Length: 228
Image (cartoon, helix red, strand yellow):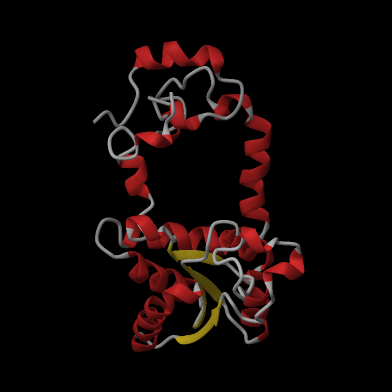
C-alpha cells in the first residue's frame, strides 16, 4: 500500500491543481523547519503567506484560542501513541479546566453514551447528556415528505442538534463531546455550540463506527466509492 505519492505522481498531477490540495503532497515540507525542505509548487504555505501570517497572529492575540491550541498540543504530545481517544478527551478537558462534560449523542447510541458517562464520572467529571431526538419535532414540520423518511407512514422525530447545543449550554457544559451524530446533524451542532467541541464516535453503522475502513478498502471491498 502506497501511503505517500512519489515525485512522479506529483509531476503527473500538479498541472490540474488549482486550489488547496495538501492531500496530493508527497513532500510535506510543513512538517519540518522552514527552509529545510523545498515544498511542491502548489503548496498552500507558498501561495498564502499573508493569510497564514494573519492566522498565526490570531493565535497570539486571542487568549482563549491560544489556551485551546496549547492544551491540544500538550494533549497530543503527552499521550501520543499511548492513550485512547476518550483518555485524550479527559486529558484535554483537564488542561482546559473543563470539569463539566456535555455529551450530544444519537438516540441509537444511548448504550455508548451511558458507557462514556460512566468513564467520565469515574474520572471525577460532571456529565450532562442530551439525546438527538429531544423535542420530538415531526420531520414533516420542516418540509420533509413522508416518502423521504426512513419509515414512511410512521411518526419520525427530527434530529435536533440545535436543541442539544442549547440545552448543554444552558446547563453549563464546558466541553461538548459528540457521540454518533449523523452527518449534517453534527454540522448543525458545531455551528451552534458556544464551547469547544470534540468527537468521541463518528457514526458509521455499516462499518461499526469506523469510517476510515471505507477509505482503506476503497480499492477492494468498496470500489464503488471510486467509480470509473
